[in-house]
Image 1 (cartoon, rainbow, N blue to C red):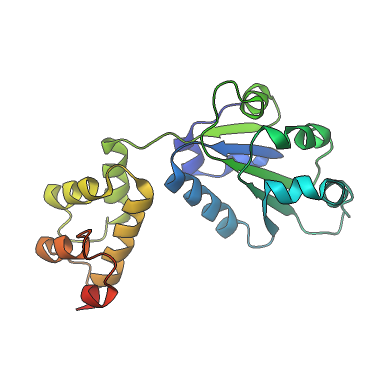
Image 2: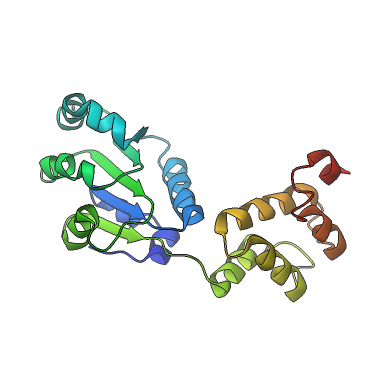
Length: 209
């Protein structure tokens, strides 16, 4: 079952399914979804693993997944760097998951990827492709995250978009700088230009000055 990424951003209802695959070239969006999962389930036990760890200890992983006490907390497994190699393990537990959630994360998966096809066709699992952002998406993000800031005009928005080159991860970094250095919530375009200047980004002492 395919779920649009913008719907996944709005809420985490896709986690009502036992297992989800989140993949794509938009690393910034994927990281945001991962962070939201961690922040919105404080009472769950969250395990952050890599695919190779699962494959190397397959029997132990399956035992932990399938032998769950009714009195245990809900467990959420975040499994990174996934590809077709993990499909056999997921298929084994497809009908057996109970009070657990599994979220697989991957970079770009080709259309012929067996893992991608498995999740797209599944009626009980979800597949969330995360494609690159466009200018309109990033403008919306800037306006939403800086809604309480004065001085967020067309020049500021365009400066941020031009600087991040449609990369959400870079945009998130620039927005974080704004929140740190404009604590009065009044954005000055000249100061902003210096703060996000790529040649001076690494000089934190300069930024503080």
